Image (cartoon, rainbow over all chains, first blue to last red; front, side, top):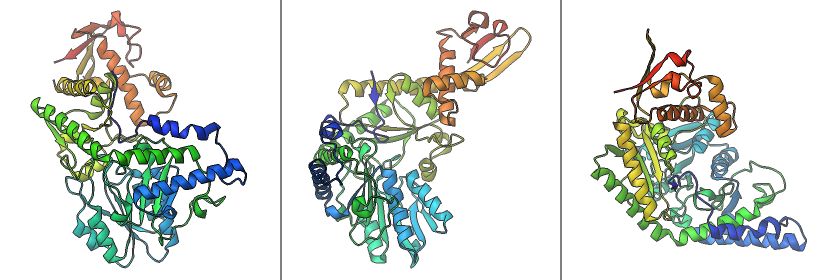
Length: 379
Length: 94
């Protein structure tokens, strides 16, 4: 039996998304910039997709830009703003951002920008007072991961947004894990930039969105044929744009049951761990409004996490340890380091991220197998 | 995979340590990496996965026993960076 529990890494393209995309690969394949019927038809499809996404997110169609990924959106948000606003050179972010933000910040630092990294508490929340204290006349941007991909922490974006508004500082949110997994209305959130990634909510890999609030000046990173309002050149990825639109529609529609169903599954799983006297720490907030539904990040005492993940893989259970493949040594994740859990738990961290399509049979199998494997590693 | 392994012959201990630290020939690591990832220069995490594949295989040779003789598994154990496998005894400690 296979049980896929790594939905925070990526999700399956849903059947309806795939069906929506297929015609645009070889029936309606026109270039949307072409002025013949085949191209005009596709131009309309893209415009309709953009409008639909804007409606779903509570914003204007002119504020929605298609990118190739959440990573590209994050890069563009920070670099695009940094290179267009040369009078300010400080950026505030957190220690638990996705690597696409941290690496971009490192790059900007190499160009002379000053980056401030907010600390987080044991649940992964930033300190609003620390944020306020760091903002000054030279602060260009605050960039915050709305829902953390590892420990599930959902930041209080409304309060962060209020601070940034009062202080007249741009706010970017990395919404990659948040979209369709928690409430995500950009008008209500009142941010200047937001990154979205399709493959986290059943659209394919290779499509993202950057929301750019009207009046926010960013420069283009990709120059060429003037697509995306001359801000992101490159022939549009039509089937994927159609796909992300359909996926966003479906995901937002099922949000209320998504949260309830997944929180129920994760609570039951933790109850089983407790009943079997498994010694673990739940990294991040308790299951509820401030935690990504379906995300569990667990650290076990005195177990090697990569061995545990390997053994589970052999039994058809696919989870993550949060380790990255571009390092020369295997280190614990920067997020786990930042929340400062006891040393004896740091070596064995598993991220388990459920989805709503798991059958009872699969849930029972994964629960028993994970518990049995942990017990066997402890003996 | 936390098992501690003892490898010895009639004269001395050849290896004593964690299963994950068994000495594995570089050529076998590369071969397995190509088999799994089609990559002859894997990153450290993929290397670690390859090691686990060999260790998992090694532990599987014991079945329910705590000890095996190298002479019975010369081919199977050829991935180990150890000489004279046929003269060695392999033991899971504890």
